[in-house]
Image 1 (cartoon, rainbow over the protein chains, first blue to last red):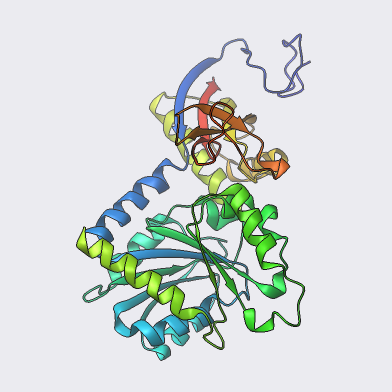
Image 2 (cartoon, chains in turn blue, cyan; image 1 turned 45 degrees about the vertical axis):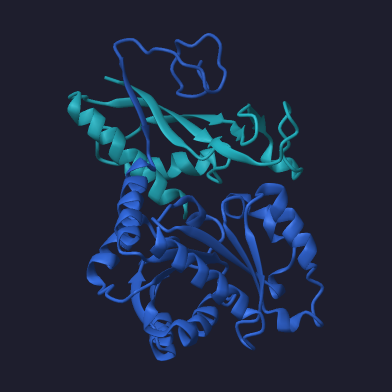
Length: 241
Length: 116
């Protein structure tokens, strides 16, 4: 008997074999199920690029300091920055960003563990992007699922904070293999924790050869200017092209 | 939980093709899933069973073929498979280049389906 489907016809029950049941037909499909998301993502990217807006998708664990970092960026960029916030529940994060001086739009995913390009596209439709130069998408706090969904951003950045431990990179290769920026946050705690920054960076290089590193403390603002300089440069080069 | 949106997308593609072909029942769905996917076969089937209830795809079995991670060397263009789990730096076997682009390994392709 076939172990896969339980039918009595299969003589060689190996997993993944192709066989035909009597009376059935085979339909060729050949579709990638993420293709729909990718179409929406390309549409989003074309829209923001045509308006000269540089966009990043920030992915990290809950509590790594995403919103605190965005508050620091809000003080620097003010109304030049718009943030799309993804959270399972509450509008707390968007309220914090608005208080820091930037514009923010909250997407409540109602249980879903990541944002997708379709939801981000609707948020862009609702937003007034006049005068916006930098669009930051703050994904749902999670190192697994958000990695698989292109939202139409120009770059993905991951935040890894010192209390999480320096072993997280190889545990979540799907994310760290596709980032353009690695932000190491909470460096103000470096004297109290055993986090080996060079180890984390080297492990990330084993998966990914092209990313920039930003060591900073969103709380004390140490190192934040290197990130704001980088973003300014990327915003200018997009505008110029 | 992260299986849910992927399985929902798989189901909607399957139902679209089932309707277009006036299918009475979907028996087996053959999938090709990239090795970089975190989704487990058992959970994919359980979510599929739950979501497909009451439709033509109810009871269909998922047959999942894991596809290797393939990189293309940026220097010489050679394509090669890598093992992402061993944690070593991928090096091009042809020219020892260290910069590559991903060719495949993240896909969720519905190859074909067996129907009544």
